[in-house]
Every structure is written in structure tokens, then in C-alpha cells.
Image 1 (cartoon, rainbow, N blue to C red):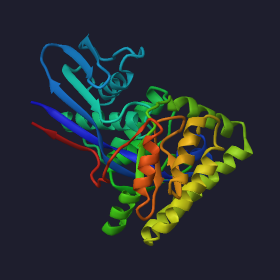
Image 2: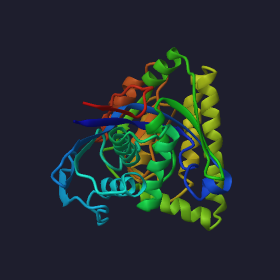
Image 3: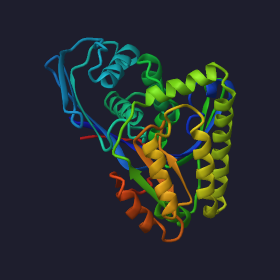
Image 4: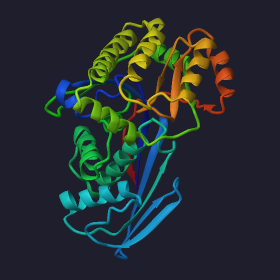
Length: 340
């Protein structure tokens, strides 16, 4: 028997950062994101040899353990081990024997939600294997708890829900830790035009998102008014972009991305590096009307809104900066698992 799962990575279109505690706990948050055809994959092969094998192909890391109820958290594939530990604690109540293999289509630090999407995919594989009675909200919340609480990894709440539900979603995060995912019914011609006009650019750099997020969290805890005001405006941006998409007003998207970019840089130091500022200016000069840093910032992917046929000039200009343009499509399907 082989159990497989996959979960899609996401582009955060607006509101990014308002889903991070303590801001979301104090003021509530709003996010607009969309999943794309890049994935995190997980495969579980049950065994009877009383061994646990963890193999992250993209990281070229492989570890083998005796089958025990709790694996050590020591910096070696801790995401995988943390998930196993929680599954045993809450569900199996006894040690399991299996081989877990994972792969992600984008590297860590890319800004596409890779870590949280991987957690979601692995949780989905365990749910499929053990036939756990968990719905979409349950899976997303469990993935969030494992990463943010059990493993104490800094980050927001949107990625686990995006990976689980898939598609275009407007997400609301409330003060009582409640999350509501609102799927958006956007006409196909609007989605096609948006995908054509949004150029996704890999800066060919990575960053540790937790470092930037911790700065953002500190600003809120320290009652930094400029940072908090920036987050308020980022949250408003999510509502404005949602309305533009639903009303077929794509001509507003570039300006709204520019609006968000200006405020995002005020949330914490290090979000926009001099290299990223140069890339942004290059895209604007080539015809883009706005852009965004994907994820926490500091590196990884950026994307730009290029109306008309300006995408070609923008792509040519960006490629001179050493990174590369990543072709993609939006996808409606979220976490998927199956058994062979």
C-alpha cells in the first residue's frame, strides 16, 4: 500500500502579515490569496520492520529511527518529526512503522508558503492512511498548531488554509482565533487575464521568513504606531483587491499592489532589500503598474502586474537582474490525497 498527497503553493495577493499574531489577535486580519500549480508532495509507505524513515528528496536529507512514540526535535527535518509526534499523541496513541518521502516544487524561503504547505500535505497523507475524521478546517488548524505551537516556528495563519482549500480565497482571521475561508467566484475571463498580466519572478535569493516575522511581531508588541498603521492598511488592501476582482476592475490591480507595497515596507525592517527595490523599480520602468513581495519579504519571489502586452518588456527587463520568471497557472484544487 502507498499513500500519497499533494497540496498547492500559493500567491498572497493582498493582506499578507495581517494574519500574524499578535496583530491578528488584537485587530483581526484579512487575506486574499490564490493557489498555483506548484505543489508540496508527501508519500507514506507503511512497513512492518519497526522502523521510521524520513526522506526529504529536495533537501537530500534522509534519517532512519527505531519506531518510537516521539522523535527528537533537533534541527533535522523537524517539520516531519513534529507532525509524526502530534499524530501519535492525538490519534494513533502508539508508535508507527513507515517510510515518509517528501518533495516541494519551490525551495524554502521562496515566499510561496512552502513550509506550511508541506506540513499540510503530510498531515493529509496521515489523514488518508489512518482514515482520520478531519474536515478541511480541522486539517488546516492542525497543520497550523503543529508548526506554530508545537514547533514554535514564527509565521502567519493563511498558508495552511490556502493549501487545504485551494483556489481564490478571501480569508478572515478573528480575535478569538476563529478563521473563515470565503471562496471567491471570479469569472474565468478575469482569472485568465489576471494570470496573463501577473508576472511571477524568482529573485534567486532566499531568506529566513521567521526573522522578519519576529521583527513584525515585536513592532506590534512594542506598540509601534507606524508598523501597526501599515498593517491596518494592508488589511484594507485585501478588501479592495477582492472587490476589484469580483467587479472585473483589473485596471485597478496595479495601483492596489503599489499601495500595498508601500505599506508592507513599513511593517518591519528587512522586508524590501536594496536588491529587491532595484528589481521593483526595473519592473515599473519596463511597464508594470505595481508589484508585490511574496511572503514575509527579504528574498524569494516577487510578482508584478503588467497590463496590456507590457509583460514581455517586463520579463526581458527582469531577466537582466539575474533571477528568472516562473510560468504558472492558478488552480482551484486544494489538498488531495489518495491510496494505491
